[in-house]
Length: 114
Image (cartoon, rainbow, N blue to C red; front, side, top):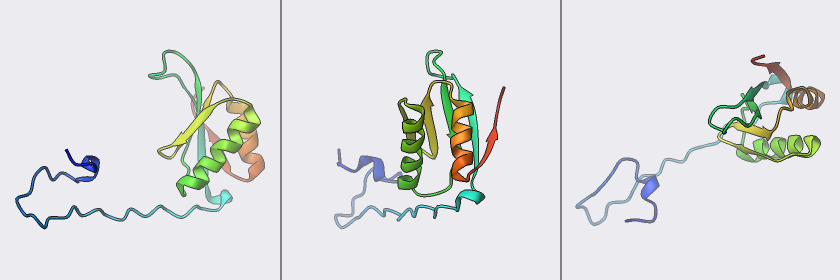
C-alpha cells in the first residue's frame, strides 16, 4: 500500500508506470476581518458520552488563525479543547464566557440553542 493512500483521489491502480497522482493545491481561504466573522456558539453533547462541550462554528480563515483563536479561548476559560475542521471545541459549558471573549475581540457572535 502506498504511503499517500489517502491522497489517491479515487485512483486504485494504474498500469502506467509513469502515472503520478494529481494532488490539487487546496488553498486556504483568507481570514476575514473580525467584524465580518459571524460565529455561532452552542452547547453540544452528541457523540460525547453525555459530556458537554461549547462549540464555536462559522469561522472563515486559515487553520493557523483558527488554532490561535482556539488557544485564546482555551486559555481564557482555563480548560482544554481543540480547533479543527473549522470548529473550536471547548470542554464544558462556557457559552456565556466564550461569547463575552469573542465580542470583546470584535467578532460577530450569535448564540444557538437553549
